[in-house]
Length: 251
Length: 244
Image (cartoon, rainbow over all chains, first blue to last red):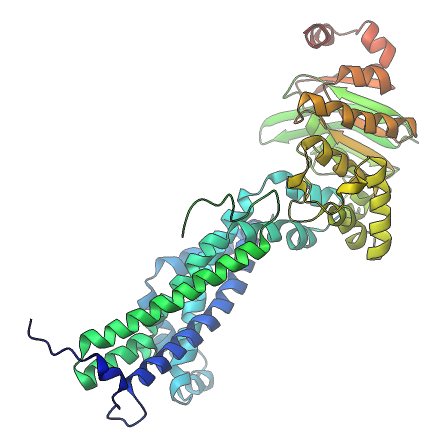
């Protein structure tokens, strides 16, 4: 292979004059994190609500939420990204659609990307939450009810604290997924880490170095997430019940 | 007026009838033991009293309040009816102290300190005061069930329902739970107890109800039930569980 390796390229200035190539990648990483974290907040909040409603004794709510989950998990993420970016503004009332299209540069891509990732992942979180709730003994709900707790109180104080402890390991996987999936946002113009690596490759022709840099940054980020979530798991472990000590599977 | 009144209650799961025209009552201060083979509907019957299981026909009253009336404030009613489950159902993520105070603060609106004091008083009565900061998973089955009884008592119930409280326990732990229940009965608590512990029934119960296939087959004072049950089915049942 006739390839001119140049690992020092990261410290070279870009032709745009905005700093070194390393700086380009780090700015990309920042946008990856900004997209993934904002979307994660939406995914957790919506996913919890939808997951709970799927187990609540209300037929219409259960049906609506089942439809929601099937909708968002059966359409490819890339297609959803295009739908949010190209199609949604056309479907909204004209003044609203125009307002979205005329947002100043990073935001016109960033906002749809966050919404898209958030909704997409919320369907997956909802599925975890539902499974977690159904994994609890039925008697727990009965015990809360028998003590006079209302249904929302039973969920808030009895069912959900246990559910989230049970589903922390799969939630960690979803968190890692949302970081990796945020790379799809480059297709609608978010200059996140993968897009930044592509820009670096196009200007410098150092394709291996550019994507090695991106790879290392993704891996480092996800290692931080994994250790962070392990710390949360240890913090929330219940003596005599579930905890890292008896957890066997990995991620 | 009876504390608990069950009148012509029938219940179906789909087309399967689990309760057929059940009628009985529990007077204030009375202890009733409900027994019968598994699948006879005794657990279902006791769960209809605080509407954990809805019924399709008949009426249930607790302290004069109709349970199966859509207008009844069920959480308020349930808060006054203590319930103890076969599998304890303590909340595993809360300490013993928090288990005891949760419903007191949320449902009865008691201040945390007041709820803690009352909870710890009942915990002391079941002999577990030193375990107040442990989690349920760190206690034995018998200890968990005693905490569950203390949790129910902390709500100042007007009556107590026990759904097979010793069935999930190792033999050596059964007595510590039965002793607490017997103590409670001596103090005049109104109790409806689903159990196979015929020794307990013989010592403590005022009346024994025998159920089979969703019917109340026998509803008799203790002496009469253990002396000579009228129904053949109850005679067979007693012969089997007393001579093993």
